[in-house]
Image (tube, rainbow, N blue to C red; front, side, top):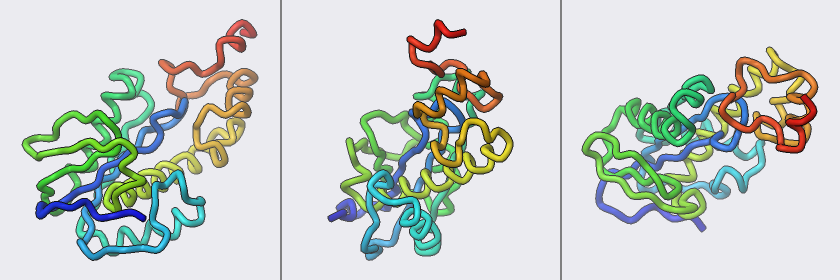
Length: 198
């Protein structure tokens, strides 16, 4: 059962989606929830079905005291690396908050401090705290929506299904059609044994 993070401070949960993809942006969300917010099936977005995530998104957006979304495209990821791009996405999301948080709780074990706001990293925090779980749902649903739109432009890669993750089907399409403008060129687009096929 998820809990609210215990602190008298204004808490903001922060999480990202798309770090492990080989195409598309990395997307982060920052969410400040009321202290009494509850939902029956809110959890780490990876534990939810797509239908559940899509049901939760408008509920989170409606009841959140503030939320922000940060999007960093694949070209910037290639320029600065995925870790720095993730920090940029998180910072962009935090910048959009209409209320100023006093403590950021971040899913994972690394974060680049944002201005003077105190922060705490929490490994697997999206499965522990409601604030981070809500951020994980928003980050995932916003990113999935982007990948579904990009799928219309490049249907060969089937991004509406794999969302840019390196599935066997996705890598097979890269092998057959090459990469496109939304692929992360600094990532290993093909497995080592596939590289010899070029």
